[in-house]
Image (cartoon, rainbow over all chains, first blue to last red; front, side, top):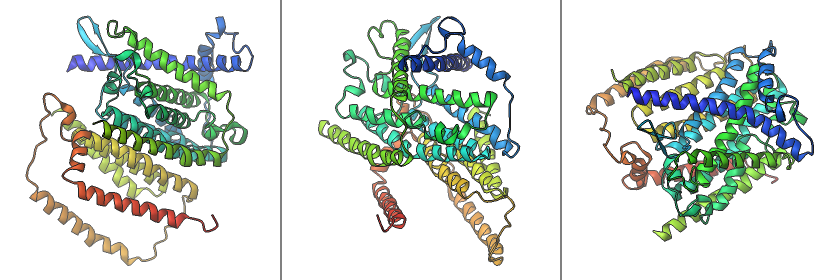
Length: 338
Length: 172
């Protein structure tokens, strides 16, 4: 029991460290990638190739003045960034980063925990994470913040349906809600068992990815913080580390949804020689997640933002029906096959 | 005491305290937030009772979807804090006492008739099919409880159609 607790603690600590570093360098990656698309150089003053930029940004943000608006609802204002960050961090513990490795004669699973309701757990935390953004908008006592918060909740409720329903097809296909088993089920056959190459699931992947972009408030779905109309949306009034917490939560959500997409569709940690060298699984997983994150960034700098009515129409009248039709097709195929 | 029991007690107390807070708070948003706390604590209680599916669905459906709508509406209406409490029929307040007594009496009679049951033991292997998992609930819903399940789905469909009819604008 003690050994198990120790194992969990170490895993969570390592995961936290890796995630925080990843988030810090994702900001640099995003700026570099954006400048590359826009034919600029991007940050290159701090360290070689701007590699110390995240550190400099972090130090700057810590020393910024922490402002709480006078008319803000203090308790809710302070709790909101914490809710967003905690919900974003908690969903990372069910994601399988690899199979099993042998460390000092002890078999260690490369995931913090496995739950037989793993997918639902992630969905539950995504839906709780909305409160961080909504409450931030409300507590700031600022019309731009409030509008940003309301938009965020409306958008996340709308796209959560397509997000969840596109997962249902995969769950029907794999027959389990446990993310670790879903990843294990896609191994072998040189990648031909990846869910994204199965017949109806390749369309589901597109729906899932679009809905995931909307869930993480990325462009073209970044209406909650549309800077041309809402200043900065729900985090307009936030400064210093509380602002950082929102930024970290957003990047974490991007990592989470990319990880879920990798696990559900792209074979998770599977890849060549992974059965002989289990640690390679971590590399494959990282590469796949990074590819999806870069795709999200690419979309961000090439596609303009939706208008609000277009956003709602697209979510309810396009994505949702496609997701439902996909469930019917998947279920029919599985029924005919059995 | 086992860890599960301690967690159960902690979250049960938390659920009761937040539920009381829903009633005590004057600001509707605080009440809604307390209700989210109640639902989340209940989910944790389900988890200690090894009903993982119910625990997850409790959060997804109630704490997630339904309460977001509550908060959404409260924020849109933005009721001022010092609004006087309008009570139209004062007499109704005293009706609450006999009804509360009735409810408590009912609860006690039901609880007394329940046979003393302990939790089913965890199976050594094949934990995926234990009581409370998605597998066991799905199997129960589509075999033993098929009729109630279908009737409920028809009921929900009626509610959806009704909402559509009520919300529809004539000129569209």
